[in-house]
Length: 208
Image (cartoon, rainbow, N blue to C red):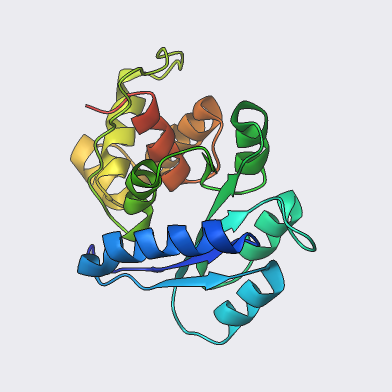
């Protein structure tokens, strides 16, 4: 799998001023990486953009729009074969809506009150299949997760993009044991996939 493989980014937002300003900023920031940024004014238009392309997409989805939006919108886009990540964005309360959107399948929740630079920093690790990402939160939340040393080792290797077989060989354990550790990591971090696990681990500074 090519570690430099780039996805395309689709911003779906019904507010033209915010949508156009954000797309201009993201297009400028990601241009040197060869990442294409597209826009849509509603979910229906976004579905058309995806259907008419053979690209692999990261979706930045406003969850408060007329028509299809919210948690149902996240689930619909996550089911599409060429959508690899859905990122929820909204002016709604972050503490209330972040767990709801992640439970619905979003990789993360971004507040519209965030700066463009913050949004770029959060999106960048999602735009490649494998990436090195350093947490920049100056006020990290407490390390409240109960992970064993072996689970932390597995999590670190996941963050480096290694598949289960490589992790098993590196730690001299079976692939089945790796799977058990990963399931326990997902359960403890309350996430549903490897990307979400890495992002949450970075947020809480669980990685070396």
